[in-house]
Amino acid sequence: MHDIEPYWNWRHRYTAEEDARSPFFGDEHSEFEFTNAVYDHAIHPQWDSFGSRTLYLKVLFADYDEGYAVIELIGEWNDLLYNDVMLLKRDVIEPMMSHGIARFILVGENVLNFHPSDDEYYSEWYEEATDADGWIALLNFREHVRDDLKAANIDQYFLLGGKLDQLDWRTFEPEDLYERVSAFVLKRLGA
Image (cartoon, rainbow, N blue to C red; front, side, top):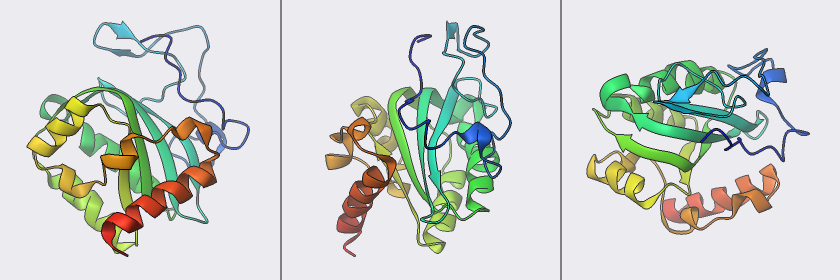
């Protein structure tokens, strides 16, 4: 896992560390010291910690005018033991929403497992996003992770599956990815 870097090809356009509205503003990353881990597996130092012991992320792009963010995840999403969704919601999502972000694209190809608890924070996030004309789309999550989300009935708060899991998102510029995902979302919502 230590050699899996967050997607880097948009860094000339956006870096959360240099965005004064980002929860990660001012963070510094070493290229050589591996301080974060998922259990006993070190992860690349470019991933950002938001308080979870097993889930890390990178805000790849945020557009405050259009109101969307692309966030890549890595690790184990564990609400049962660590209430990861609460940490994510309170420490990342809410600060972003306070600056007008209401549409979230979560890239989950490096999310290895999902362990559910209750759906309180998912419901809250969904309601706040939809109240602001937003949504939460999951891209390229592994099939067993999607199955676990569905089994916990948490999939009702996200748009996932189908074309959203077949999207080669790295081939797009962020605006093009947003337009493509937005079109899928609107089609699914019947708008």
